[in-house]
Length: 173
Length: 452
Image 1: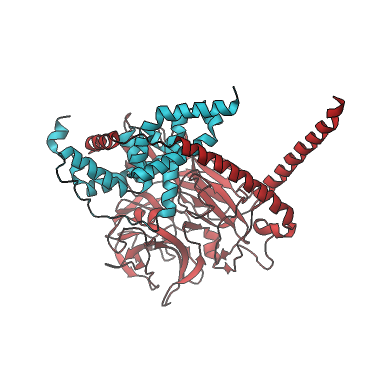
Image 2 (image 1 turned 60 degrees about the vertical axis):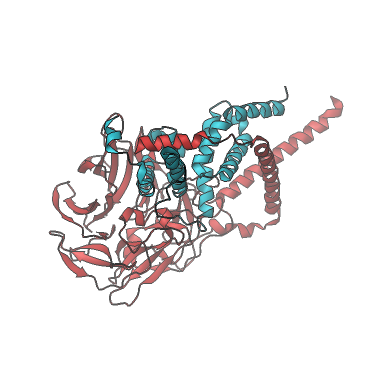
């Protein structure tokens, strides 16, 4: 089989299998479907360029790492125009149930974190990685992960007070 | 909070569709490849056209008339392909190191924590990659004589401090002196450059849900370590560290306190810091034996230096030096022969929502996201306003100056490198050789073809 064709086929197969999970992570990293699509496209394009080297290792980890770094890099270029609001986010309201409202508030609050803080939150609390694994995934020190994680959780607590568990919830676990 | 946060994140992600980006990603990748190929061809054309004389931007000889260590009055960004700290020709001692998020300090694709290094007596530049965001003056420190850079290195399994010698080009590894440590960072150089204070972070349980901080003073020749302090993990721990001029005592900040010990690790005293004050910086000890603090005027972004009695922490009043306005904070580098203080001033990033005229933790005031640029200012006794002695481009966000340069009091007219650096030309030379080899091989193959 021609090497180029084989490469395209294996890459296509990988994207078909993993794009749903990768899309979910991209959305949590950006908080916006359009930006998430752009982010995933950019990370996959980079992965495709290095597919020969990447495919025999852990291509999904490579895409994820590319997304984390791409997101921080984009933010650095955009951040002069961006202003991060320090006020609590509006509670997702209307006819939503309490859990739906909380989910909407969390997504809105995530948008108000810096990308590095957001990446740490997604890796720690969505991907369930340890701090050391987060440091490895982001290519930074454990101290940096701790600082961003600490800042992110404190900021989320300010923005979404409902995230703080009620005493009854904690004692029940 | 973590349980509810986990649940909320999972619910938010559950409804996300799979984005149909495969075809566009492949098209983008192919387009990028074509552009890169065109870029390489253009660079090769440029090499053929640019006269050799124009290439010396980053590697030229030192300007004449400069003798001894001096502070450049401005710094530039590392040029593309700048030589590394350990490349030949060796740089020799440095005057200044800097870091941030400007071009040349962050890597082409990923964050790589590049440190810019400027020669002590001429504007020769080098770079060193820490691998991740590491602000100089806090996590990466220039030795008092400018000869060595201490930077965090290794991994969480084998943490270490890397000591980069700019004179002989050797990188020496200093493993953590604390068993079980997952992070070790330099915190302060002793004035003679023979000892280093290091900060360690150690998990206190197998789940790594809690950590302790350890501060140690390590002799670099023998590796002997003196434990200065061990405590539960704190946001501000051993930053900054300030030695007396003779190296017999050192002061450091943890949380809202200043601690003072002798070089054998014997605690001498400690005192609490008033709100919105901090230990001034590595140059905090005054010649008269008092200790300087930085303090913010109420409801303002105006910072000034005060001094206290180190035995009791009693405030001895503001120093007769101009205040610095419109900054997130200042850090004291040291004192010049004319009695002026040299400080790093952090200019706020207008895009950040943070309020710097309101209480904020000191480590947040120098965080990259909050700062747009830094400058080194001289605060002369009796002067009405600070004088800028070193200007830096925007997004240079941290700077450290060798004590020897601070104490010389000398400033030179800077001429930062331009164009491209030495490594670029090495790469071009190698590419030309390879290209020549390929062309020669093709010519030989073609010549043999008809006979085959």
